[in-house]
Image 1 (tube, rainbow, N blue to C red):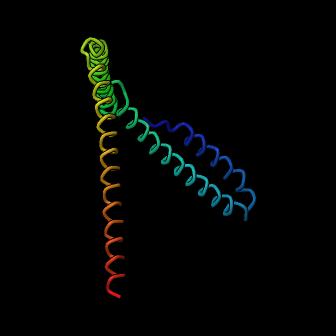
Image 2 (cartoon, helix red, strand yellow):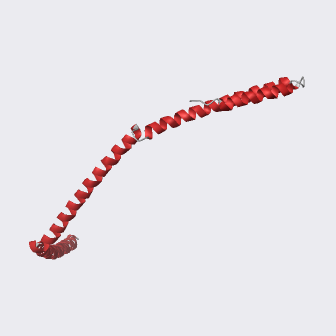
Length: 158
């Protein structure tokens, strides 16, 4: 619905201006041109306002209580709520499992077995180091023996 009230008043105001200017011969033409420009600007502004109004109506329709965008938003929020509830349930289950496992560890003897295993590994490491040291000493003795024999052969060849 368009209200022609302001345009009607503007037209009446222009008519009064034209009548008052008719007494001055050269001014009528220039004032008439100015009034036409003013009318054109008024119409253009009215068209812009109408387009803006159409845009606002469309946006309001999309985001209104039964609008498509509002429905999408409601659906997304419902999905998010369900996902959060699933996450909460999974976290609760994981926490309960962790607590139950932590409670069973001391009774299971795993810590004692782990301690024994660590001692066995330490003992095996010491045995390997001792074995390596013995083998190293044997290799050093063999090398020294070969060097002595080579030196004796070298003295005997001269």
